[in-house]
Structures are given as structure tokens and as C-alpha cells.
Image (cartoon, rainbow, N blue to C red):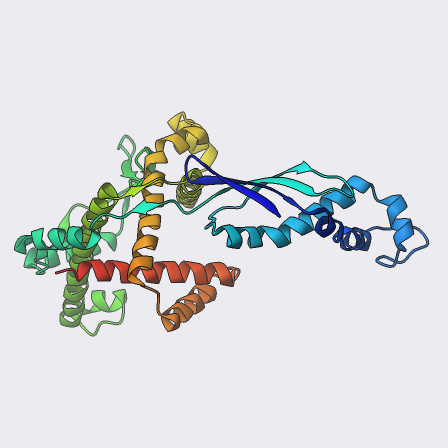
Length: 369
């Protein structure tokens, strides 16, 4: 094969070349047979039509296109291996020469893993961890924390009064994680504000909430949960600081396709959230006076940062030889498949590997003390 590889902007490459005539011609019989398997002709059984009859009933261009498809399916991976190209997207293939008794000419454009100049991620993580104050580290559960949480639970279990004529509906903000969302859901019931109307906080009340023996047992477990929630919030806050610093100090030319993939994910989650709220996504867009294209522009920076994060974490994992534990991956996949019956096992495995590997990377960064 004659191959030339040209680097393009945005971490893309163009591969141009030819597959020699003898190799290309060797696919003729295979292509004809494959096309003939689905051809229906009176007087012949499906898949048993003679070659001479197939030739007179299948256009030559169809045979040539199938030959090209077969040849490139086999040789494209070999080209990537030979040229040491780390591709991360589906190739865009255009045929430049397609004729019998001739070489197969082609051009392939694909995105590749970009060059990443990592920041001093160990040093950055260490500085941020050292900068955390004792006050920030404090996850003590106060009496007020307990009282506020118990009050919230009692309010949530209190009967709601239906509105009287003339009263204004209670407004809940939804979807605050999306910067551009302004959807409001109107509640025709109003919350109880008088503490005398709240259910009594006693053994009977907590037993109705779950497997609790009495108020003392409930409070002990509630205290553990509040402490765990505080610890998780502190951990997430620290991790966010670490990764924001590493992203800011690292250099990476993110391929456009990765930004588009992240945009697809953001909009998919957004549409799912809106649908779960009982609204139509189209109506939501009308409410914002926006089109999907506008949202893609709005969320482009978020998508870019998500793509950068994925690339940087992947590079750190390579450098530090961090891999997910195979047993943990298997357990995680089993859980995913038991919950989502129609999930693709391979995608579930990739997701589990990614999540568990990233967790190990963050644990590694957090240990830079």
C-alpha cells in the first residue's frame, strides 16, 4: 500500500493512499457472493444463484462499492497499526479511485488522541490539599444540623393544605444544575408552617420511616448519615479544586468530535430531566425562546472542559499505570445489568472501568501529602 499521513488542525489526520490492484481484485468474488446472498430471483433459491446470473443482475458499481468496503474494513486497522495512529473517532472515508483492474484510491479523515502537556498534577494536588483549613475539614455534626434535618423530615411528612381561592401557588425551581433553565412548576398545595400541625417526632413516627427501633436509634443513624454527607461534600469540593487547577495548567488541543460527544451527553441528560418533570422538551425550548443549536453554543464551554478532563485523567492513568480492579469492574457491571436489563454489556463494562479508574486517579491525587 502507498500511504501518506497529513496532520490537520484540531488533532485530526488525513490518510491518503491506494490498495494495490491485485489485492483489491481479490475481493471481487467475496463481494459478489455477499451481494448475491440477499438477491431474490425467480427460479433460484436464495443464496444459490450462479455467479454468471449474479453478474448480469447486480450493477458493477454495487460490486465495486462492496469490494471497497471489504478491503478498507480489513486494511484500515492495519494502516493505523503501521502508522502508529491512535484514533478516537469513526473515520470519514472518501473513495478517490474505484474501477475494475485498478488500485483502490481512498482518503480517510479521523480524529486522534491529541498531544497532552500535563501540568505538575502531583504538586498541584499537594498544594491544594495543604491549603484546606481545619474549619473546612471539620465535619462535626452539630445539634442544629440534627434539629434542622429532623424538622425538614417532619415537614415533608406533614399533610398539605389545599389552596384557598385567591392564594398564590407555591413555586419550586427545577433543574438548577442547568445554567439556562428557568422552568417553574406550580404546586396547588401549600406547605405547613405551623409546628403544631407537624407530626409528632416519636418512636411511631421514626418506625414508619424505616427499620429504626426508636428515636434514639434513628438519631444515631441520622448523625452518621449527616457526617458522611459532609465528608462527601468536602471531598468533592477538594477534588474539584484539584482538577480545575490541573486543567488550567495543562495544554491539550481537544478534537472537535470529543466536544460534540460531550454536548450530546449534556443535552440528553437535560431532555431526560425535563421529561421526568412531566414537560415536553419542545415546549421547554419555546419557553426559553431557544433552539437546540443555541443550547449547544451555550454549553460548549462546559463540554470542552468535560472533554479536557477525560483526556487529562486518561493521560494521568497512562503515566502512573493506574487501572481499575478487574473484580470490582465485574461486580459493577453485574449491578448495572441487573438494574438496566437492556443495557449493552460491553458499554456497561467500559462505563464501569472508566468510573473505577477515575476514582483510583482521584485517590492517587488526594494522597499527594
